[in-house]
Image (tube, rainbow over all chains, first blue to last red; front, top):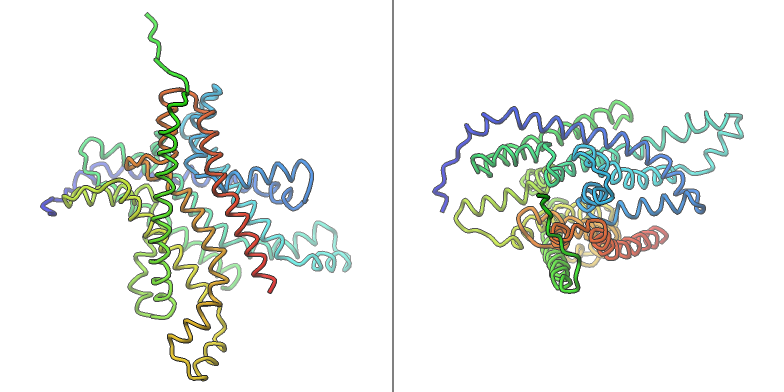
Length: 220
Length: 219
């Protein structure tokens, strides 16, 4: 048992490839968060509307995104659209699938944030003579932002970890790049330990930055 | 000469294979949820009430939450292989997912115990209850109400995460459907069926948990 010599130098030779993978991981994560946020805003408003086509559409999206595995969503974009002769490269398929997922979760987060501000505050601001725009901009949104901030960062971390699914559809993000790099030497353990460390550093960096921003912005 | 890929359509005889995938998904979910909850309750209580445990367990909690599950599966799989005891894919899945579920559950247990007002604890202690009596009759029942809806949400997340064990060769539902897709080239049809299955499990449970949450908020 354990008469195995670890062999790390081979990992350092391939380290630049792993870093290149990490860059793609970050790209996919950030793009999918930007698009996901842009889609989640109207979705959360439609969800609040209680009825109509928009509500049905948004509810369908949110429930589908939250109640099926992320890997299933990736397959659906990559293989499912493929059988309709829409062939996306794995990079765009990954961004699209993660965007779908992020939008679903973020829509619920935003909805919760909007619900957490009592409607009386809006009425009060309006009756003080503020325009609808400034009532939202100065009274409602600052509070929503504060409620939504940490769940949003959580979702960002989820997206980072979920982007590792790219390996399965052949994307060379960090996990995929690691898989490819180890396939010449089969030093699986060494390579993936290093990949795990890179993920850990990225996740911790996001968490730390978020904490710093929160102290700066909200004083807590 | 044109090479023709020999696809064959979906047949009724594929059904047992899909059902095997369903069964494997359910078994894995059940095992990991059971072990994970047991681990999580103990760890969550330790992290809430024993300061030393908080420090000792911090790396485990931290790493489990910041490394993708796929990589955790691969690492556990290959480290057992290196140690010379190759493990069945099912057990790789059970180990990783139980530890993962344990961390998520422990957060909920902590939040639940933390939500019990400390005046209540002091009151019960000054009535002569021991630490354990207080935990058993006062804190735990109150913590359970905040814990339960979140725990159901975690089980749903776990059900979805079982799909990832396919990377170490476990034939669960999504893997089984991918094999079928490779043979039949009917990606959309097979995937729609698979998605419907996951949805049929997760959606009712999540509706139930949301209703519970609302009930608990109102009293």
